[in-house]
Image (tube, rainbow, N blue to C red; front, side, top):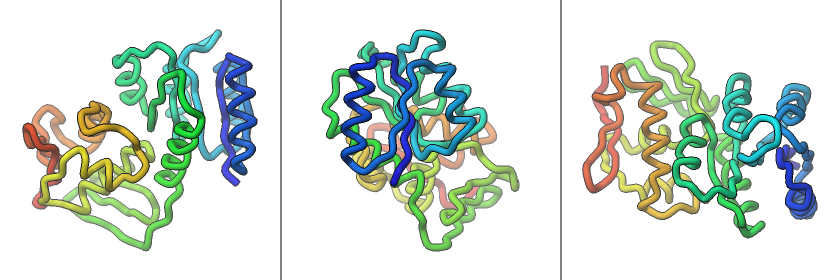
Length: 227
């Protein structure tokens, strides 16, 4: 049974989500503000966080930043603002997915299940090596020069998908199909944001990438030969 924390100040929305997810055999805890939510995360283990952007004390972006300082748990952000920049900011600071309000609870459930699969999937013991970069799928750890990379669950899986297909150009459609369950269309810029974040961890110069290359008008390719 997955244990989910919801940080949402709209009590009607929070109660609806709690009831719906509980019916789906999930254990749900709700907090009405960011401070209480962070304290709950520090006290107990949760499998995923549903985080509203508009909170009464500290906003969801700041909560996300603070959570990422001590946890790589999957985070799904909710916002009523409908601003693409909010989505980009959320992804840049470490959120795994984004859902605008109002939303269909079934879509939220599908997205939560998807990020839980990405965060907890157990692969057969497989290690990919590309020069100084190593990706251990079974341990869900990527390292550069022996140092662990602080990737979110989504970013790790995105990096792994590209690395498994090293040398092959992959479109956004192909990437999202390989990631399974991330319901975004091929023109969504979320993939680009995550690629940028991954590059900041694995590239010596993110502005001149050598590991993940952009193929203009097509998608991305993970270079086979790396130093």
